[in-house]
Image (cartoon, rainbow, N blue to C red; front, side, top):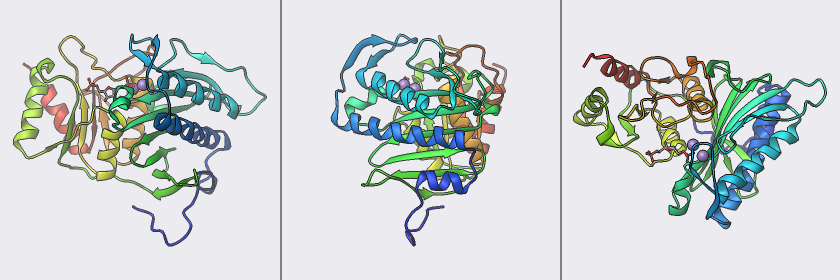
Length: 313
Ligand code: AHG
Ligand code: MN
Ligand code: MN
């Protein structure tokens, strides 16, 4: 529901406190918001070139990937409530020394998702998943919260701690103010967002996409996970998929910092998220670069995908 401008819109910290979010969890969400303001500024003014390094996945890192990673890592450390992090841009789990007896959290994040789209001025995002304790490799069902920041025509922050999904928009004063509350997905939609190269689709995937096309679904795919998911969430329906492909049976997207946080948000908005055979949030992660195929969005379309994929070839 869009929050009307009948009064001064509520700021992020004020909202988190009024919703009774635990102080440590609230400070992590808030500090990712602070980090995103620096990333937002760097993206619109700074160096978009290559850093001359590559990450664990062999992907060339942009200066912006590395900068965004540094900024988020620094702000998470600053909370004094984070003990371990997994970042797409780091090859190992990063451990912060414990600070006192306060409850600790572990965070998995993709500092800049879709970075190859920055130089063509398409929307990109930051994706964050938050767990209690000092183990960042837990099943997604155990998340305490998840969020993303979308750097688009507007810069927006969407989060959930399991009590509804909320959107905040960065205003001209540099404050995130509440713009949508209790965002919900309808069970059925008419947008489909098919990732991956068509010629690498497996037969049942090809049949599923063919069914969607023959039944009037509209193709909406930007190549950025965050804007593509945000469109389905805010349009209120539809399905995003990045399937198993010939040569990559686990698809492309990473479980800890891309799939689990988005699955948490979409399930909290009343949608579902599947690997094609089981809920994403029930997958037990074994290693930090684990990938899964994903079908995520309105319940009916996700269930349909599972049915198509279950057919014996
Ligand atoms: P990242 O830039 O963090 O590596 O992620 C990019 C991902 C995701 O944003 C998107 O859904 C997917 O790559 C697009 O992949 P294709 O270019 O193969 O469609
Ligand atoms: Mn990514
Ligand atoms: Mn990335």
